[in-house]
Length: 414
Image (cartoon, rainbow, N blue to C red):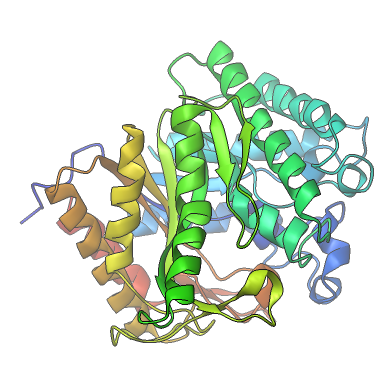
């Protein structure tokens, strides 16, 4: 019997990102990771997109989150590639013809190489150049109601400006703050531009949230760092959307408050959730902390070593509900080659979603990550998130048992 908890218009979908499926010869990540010299087109989704989009109908989803690869659209500073724009419009048209809601991410980590070299996010000029891209997209693409301006801006900040493990590869907290201010300013400006053209648009960011806990609950330093991390990683962006002020507290540094023009610039809020992280004080580590995973709940670890912690999804949805806008789980998935683990992960997290709905939290959608196996940034091609398995030698797609189970979950709750 179908569930009475999920509304009829609930978005059941899968999520992907363009670069992780199709690569791009013009992107900063292409020269960043040597793996991409061996597999520059990754899954060849750019040419096999019709085959992949047909899988959506097979699954029975009614929504699909995908991103536009900026570097394909604007490979050089003053050059627009109209064939790329036509390609993404064709994807939108195929989705609409099959009654699947397109959810378009405008920025999912990657940049044109010219942008990251000349106008990285800590430069004021980054705003002008990103907004030119936004205006081009809004002029050329039709049929989209749901827009995500930035995927996981804090992950981009941590990787690109604090850890230096992502482009632009810097380790500078002051530049990180400038970059974050410019990124959030771009969200605000893009929000306005989208609504000028599409008054009924639904616009958000996708914010990576994690359940955070002290490594040793009896250790006051672990507890302190856990609270600081929870405020920064989960709550500071929420507070900025509520107040227009971003307050950042790095460990052992004076709190910093900056004005950002994003107050109430949300129509929904995208939540990406994967795991719980334990925080441990370590004076020999940068900022005095280290991140640990441990299997406390007995649900196991993923192939990437992340703890499976479905109850954390309820926590972060409760945190995000303070925004008083609808929530959409824009990513949730597990890296594993074991179909049964994938099925159990999915069931437990959809159960957690259902409990959140029963408590009155306004969640309007769930997107599993990912449709097919893909390039997983620092993990390369080893992290198997897909509902469909990809043989990276032959590029054949093969359904997993988890794909059939997700179809069953959708039917049973629709």
